Amino acid sequence: MNSYETVFIATPVLSDLQVKELVDKFQGVITENGGQIVNVEEWGLKKLEYPIQKKTTGFYVFLEFTGEGSLIETLETQYRRDERVIRFLTFKQDKYAQEYAAKRRAKLAHKTTEE
Image 1 (cartoon, one colour):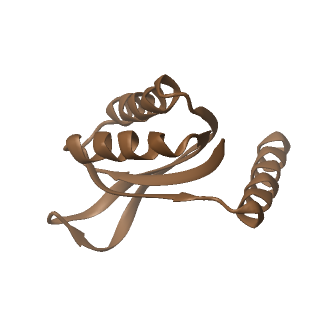
Image 2 (cartoon, rainbow, N blue to C red):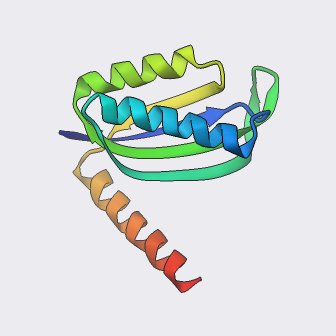
């Protein structure tokens, strides 16, 4: 099993509930195709560096997961078919990226327990 990270940007006209449904949909695509979710972060509404489809903001969502290589094609096909997704990027983590991601998750977990 390989480790992957994907970030997608959803259109800014969605409500919080609709964004949550979108995240659940893509988590379902991953798990239904033999993948396992490691981490999910909703970064919220952020300003885009340049307009995409005449939109200047978007909801950023970060997913970290493990799975087979064939899963990526299925996931990206679903991104392309969903009109609520305006951009996405998926990449395979090497061993250094996996170590960094683990440290980052631990740091975030530590930060949330302090609050």
